[in-house]
Image 1: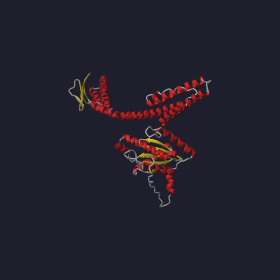
Image 2 (image 1 turned 135 degrees about the vertical axis):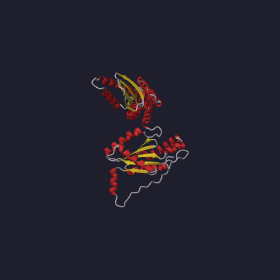
Image 3 (image 1 turned 45 degrees about the vertical axis):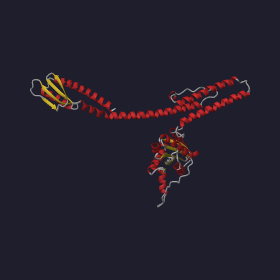
Length: 415
């Protein structure tokens, strides 16, 4: 990009020089055409014009006809050009093109920076739009599968934007084969209305089996859209949807809601020492450990990288802290893979406040997680809202204090 800008500025500088020489020639011709001006006045006007254009001309020599003296201006460093004009001999010196190119670059520098920022912003927006578009289309396919009329099944059209995905083509091919088979089976059942009950029951059993297979394929596709492929917990997109719904429901019903943000400590070292494949296995085991501890009390999702998020409906911050400590202790006592890899966690805990938005609640939990990292890792930090923190301070008597101790590790339940 810099090379392109330099070439473009050089081209612009040359073009401006040519334009300025043409303008100078026209201007001097107009000055000469004024008969009422003396030779001295014309010379002064020409030199004054050149002085005003010092960003293009570095010097000039002007010699009127029938005059032995030559008027000079500037230091004449650059490219000389002779202009033969009626009544005058004019020699001007152009500034080097590189100097003008630098001026053009300085003038256009902010424009180039702004253009680069706009391109980056456009790339980010396109990435977000493509991700949302893909998710929307996968969800639409799931809705199409759910809406299949078993009385009149019709094959589903493939989405052009998803047709490059092998798993999608295989699943949809199986679905359409089943749909066609269902349609054929139904037509056969209608044609065999007068046949024996035993044969009808056999066909109905086969039809039910195909329906179950269709439902399983539907569930498989739905899981593909909502589940993280590596850890088999909810993905970030599904978490955002569920989290927004739980926050809205908790506020409407005035119920408690807490969230945990969990990060595996020094996970980069695991990848560096044991390789990314072992690192993936550790992530899988860690996700299953967290899911086992949380159980039916909440929802577990992969937040990104080695981070996980947990939604705990009906939990205040005290109960959520206890759950977080169980997760921390379980992982701290676990050993993964044949190498007996030991991984600890830092956890940030936050409870929904009446005035919280989804982003504000997550921000407080993330800040608490950051503090847990900064205070030595392998610990749980609570994020109190401003209102609850003020209440806590006012409720303490003089000389009282609260001490938070790490819980003892529980026995490993997920090895």
